[in-house]
Length: 166
Image 1 (cartoon, rainbow, N blue to C red):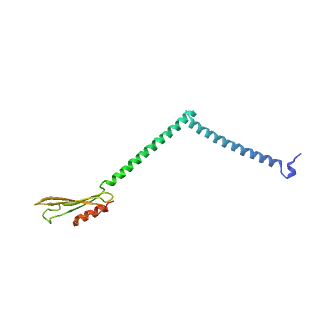
Image 2 (image 1 turned 90 degrees about the horizontal axis):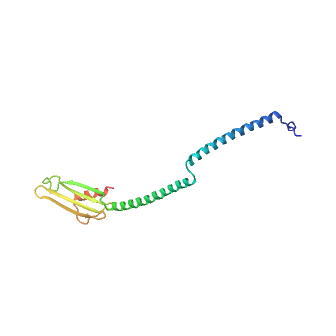
Image 3 (image 1 turned 180 degrees about the vertical axis):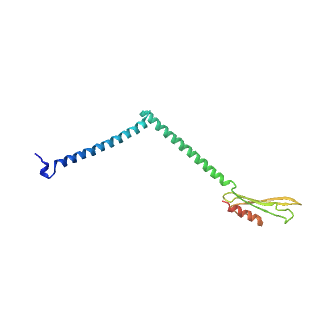
Protein backbone atom coordinates (compact mmCIF):
# COMPACT_ATOMS: atom_id res chain seq x y z
CA UNK A 1 0.00 0.00 0.00
CA UNK A 2 1.12 3.55 -0.74
CA UNK A 3 2.04 5.79 2.17
CA UNK A 4 2.71 9.52 1.95
CA UNK A 5 5.23 9.18 4.73
CA UNK A 6 7.37 7.03 2.44
CA UNK A 7 7.93 10.00 0.12
CA UNK A 8 8.27 12.56 2.87
CA UNK A 9 4.78 14.10 2.84
CA UNK A 10 2.39 14.34 5.69
CA UNK A 11 -1.23 13.39 5.17
CA UNK A 12 -2.46 16.68 6.66
CA UNK A 13 -0.59 18.74 4.05
CA UNK A 14 -1.85 16.57 1.19
CA UNK A 15 -5.45 16.89 2.41
CA UNK A 16 -5.03 20.66 2.78
CA UNK A 17 -3.60 20.89 -0.75
CA UNK A 18 -6.48 18.91 -2.21
CA UNK A 19 -9.01 21.03 -0.26
CA UNK A 20 -7.38 24.21 -1.61
CA UNK A 21 -7.51 22.81 -5.12
CA UNK A 22 -11.22 21.98 -4.68
CA UNK A 23 -11.94 25.54 -3.47
CA UNK A 24 -10.09 27.04 -6.47
CA UNK A 25 -11.98 24.78 -8.87
CA UNK A 26 -15.27 25.69 -7.16
CA UNK A 27 -14.54 29.44 -7.59
CA UNK A 28 -13.58 28.91 -11.23
CA UNK A 29 -16.80 27.01 -11.90
CA UNK A 30 -18.83 29.88 -10.35
CA UNK A 31 -17.04 32.41 -12.60
CA UNK A 32 -17.65 30.24 -15.66
CA UNK A 33 -21.33 29.81 -14.77
CA UNK A 34 -21.79 33.58 -14.34
CA UNK A 35 -20.15 34.23 -17.73
CA UNK A 36 -22.38 31.60 -19.32
CA UNK A 37 -25.51 33.14 -17.82
CA UNK A 38 -24.39 36.59 -19.00
CA UNK A 39 -23.81 35.22 -22.49
CA UNK A 40 -27.20 33.48 -22.39
CA UNK A 41 -28.94 36.76 -21.43
CA UNK A 42 -27.22 38.58 -24.29
CA UNK A 43 -28.18 35.81 -26.71
CA UNK A 44 -31.80 35.86 -25.54
CA UNK A 45 -31.94 39.66 -25.85
CA UNK A 46 -30.55 39.37 -29.38
CA UNK A 47 -33.00 36.67 -30.34
CA UNK A 48 -36.01 38.15 -28.50
CA UNK A 49 -39.17 37.91 -30.58
CA UNK A 50 -37.18 36.49 -33.44
CA UNK A 51 -37.12 33.09 -34.91
CA UNK A 52 -34.46 32.22 -37.46
CA UNK A 53 -36.62 33.37 -40.37
CA UNK A 54 -37.39 36.82 -38.98
CA UNK A 55 -33.71 37.30 -38.13
CA UNK A 56 -32.86 36.40 -41.72
CA UNK A 57 -35.47 38.94 -42.88
CA UNK A 58 -33.95 41.62 -40.64
CA UNK A 59 -30.51 41.02 -42.12
CA UNK A 60 -32.00 41.02 -45.63
CA UNK A 61 -33.65 44.40 -45.00
CA UNK A 62 -30.37 45.83 -43.70
CA UNK A 63 -28.57 44.68 -46.84
CA UNK A 64 -31.33 46.15 -49.03
CA UNK A 65 -30.98 49.46 -47.18
CA UNK A 66 -27.22 49.39 -47.72
CA UNK A 67 -27.70 48.77 -51.45
CA UNK A 68 -30.22 51.65 -51.61
CA UNK A 69 -27.80 53.96 -49.79
CA UNK A 70 -24.94 52.94 -52.10
CA UNK A 71 -27.15 53.71 -55.10
CA UNK A 72 -28.02 57.12 -53.65
CA UNK A 73 -24.33 57.84 -52.98
CA UNK A 74 -23.50 57.01 -56.59
CA UNK A 75 -26.29 59.32 -57.75
CA UNK A 76 -25.13 62.13 -55.44
CA UNK A 77 -21.54 61.68 -56.61
CA UNK A 78 -22.66 62.02 -60.23
CA UNK A 79 -24.61 65.20 -59.38
CA UNK A 80 -21.58 66.63 -57.60
CA UNK A 81 -19.41 65.98 -60.65
CA UNK A 82 -21.95 67.83 -62.82
CA UNK A 83 -21.99 70.74 -60.37
CA UNK A 84 -18.18 70.86 -60.38
CA UNK A 85 -18.19 71.03 -64.18
CA UNK A 86 -20.83 73.79 -64.10
CA UNK A 87 -18.80 75.74 -61.55
CA UNK A 88 -15.87 75.86 -63.96
CA UNK A 89 -18.08 77.93 -66.30
CA UNK A 90 -19.36 80.39 -63.67
CA UNK A 91 -17.79 83.71 -62.75
CA UNK A 92 -15.98 83.15 -59.48
CA UNK A 93 -13.38 85.90 -59.43
CA UNK A 94 -14.22 89.59 -59.18
CA UNK A 95 -12.13 92.72 -59.39
CA UNK A 96 -13.56 96.24 -59.18
CA UNK A 97 -11.81 99.61 -59.25
CA UNK A 98 -13.59 102.97 -58.89
CA UNK A 99 -11.94 106.04 -60.42
CA UNK A 100 -12.48 109.55 -61.79
CA UNK A 101 -12.42 109.15 -65.58
CA UNK A 102 -12.42 112.84 -66.52
CA UNK A 103 -10.44 114.28 -63.61
CA UNK A 104 -12.88 116.17 -61.41
CA UNK A 105 -15.52 116.63 -64.09
CA UNK A 106 -17.46 113.41 -63.42
CA UNK A 107 -16.51 112.53 -59.85
CA UNK A 108 -15.57 108.98 -58.87
CA UNK A 109 -18.63 107.41 -60.47
CA UNK A 110 -16.58 105.60 -63.13
CA UNK A 111 -15.57 101.98 -62.50
CA UNK A 112 -13.92 98.93 -64.01
CA UNK A 113 -15.47 95.54 -63.23
CA UNK A 114 -13.68 92.28 -64.07
CA UNK A 115 -15.46 88.91 -63.86
CA UNK A 116 -13.46 85.71 -64.41
CA UNK A 117 -14.08 81.96 -64.29
CA UNK A 118 -11.75 79.59 -62.46
CA UNK A 119 -9.76 79.29 -65.71
CA UNK A 120 -9.44 83.11 -65.89
CA UNK A 121 -11.86 83.46 -68.80
CA UNK A 122 -14.35 86.33 -68.68
CA UNK A 123 -14.59 90.03 -69.37
CA UNK A 124 -13.61 93.50 -68.25
CA UNK A 125 -16.38 96.11 -68.20
CA UNK A 126 -15.28 99.74 -68.06
CA UNK A 127 -17.99 102.31 -67.33
CA UNK A 128 -16.83 105.92 -67.65
CA UNK A 129 -19.14 108.59 -66.22
CA UNK A 130 -19.08 112.29 -67.11
CA UNK A 131 -21.37 115.01 -65.73
CA UNK A 132 -21.60 116.69 -69.12
CA UNK A 133 -21.48 113.84 -71.64
CA UNK A 134 -23.22 110.95 -69.83
CA UNK A 135 -21.85 107.43 -69.44
CA UNK A 136 -19.79 105.26 -71.79
CA UNK A 137 -19.45 101.50 -71.23
CA UNK A 138 -16.89 99.22 -72.86
CA UNK A 139 -16.39 95.44 -72.63
CA UNK A 140 -13.11 93.64 -73.29
CA UNK A 141 -12.80 89.85 -73.49
CA UNK A 142 -10.37 87.93 -71.26
CA UNK A 143 -9.05 84.49 -72.32
CA UNK A 144 -6.85 82.52 -69.90
CA UNK A 145 -6.09 85.72 -68.01
CA UNK A 146 -4.87 87.54 -71.13
CA UNK A 147 -6.42 90.48 -73.00
CA UNK A 148 -5.43 91.16 -76.60
CA UNK A 149 -6.32 94.86 -76.67
CA UNK A 150 -4.78 97.80 -74.84
CA UNK A 151 -5.84 98.23 -71.21
CA UNK A 152 -6.00 101.33 -69.07
CA UNK A 153 -4.26 101.46 -65.69
CA UNK A 154 -7.57 100.90 -63.88
CA UNK A 155 -8.44 97.93 -66.12
CA UNK A 156 -5.06 96.34 -65.36
CA UNK A 157 -5.65 96.86 -61.61
CA UNK A 158 -9.11 95.30 -61.82
CA UNK A 159 -7.84 92.33 -63.86
CA UNK A 160 -5.00 91.66 -61.42
CA UNK A 161 -7.39 91.95 -58.48
CA UNK A 162 -9.71 89.35 -60.05
CA UNK A 163 -6.83 86.98 -60.89
CA UNK A 164 -5.71 87.00 -57.24
CA UNK A 165 -9.13 85.80 -56.05
CA UNK A 166 -9.24 82.08 -55.29
